[in-house]
Image (tube, rainbow, N blue to C red; front, top):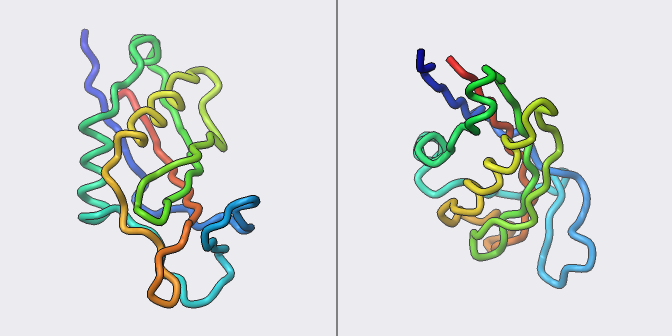
Length: 135
C-alpha cells in the first residue's frame, strides 16, 4: 500500500542567530540590533512553503520504514539574497537523509529579499525548521 506523503514547513522562523559573521568584510547583523528588517523569501512564506513541498523528495528508505522527521537548518541570507553556509542544527537520527535533502532543496531556492538596516542590505542568519511526516 502506497502511503501519502505530507511535508510541513513550519511557517514561523525560529528567529535570528545571535552573534556576528566572523571574518566577513560585509555588514552583518545580530538579533538584538534595532531597526533590522529580516530577510524573507520573495513572494512570501506561502510561496516558499509551496517551493519546499514541490521540490522535497522524501527519502525512499525513510518513507518505506514510515519514519517521520525534523530538520532545523541554519543558513545565511547574503547581501544579494542568495543563501549560503547551510548547517544542520538538529535532525532525525533515524533518517539523516532528511537533512541532506533539506539542504539540497534550500540550495535550489530562489533568492530572498535580503535583511536591511538603515536602508542597506546586510548579511543575516536565519533558522528554518522543517517537519516531515509520512501520512
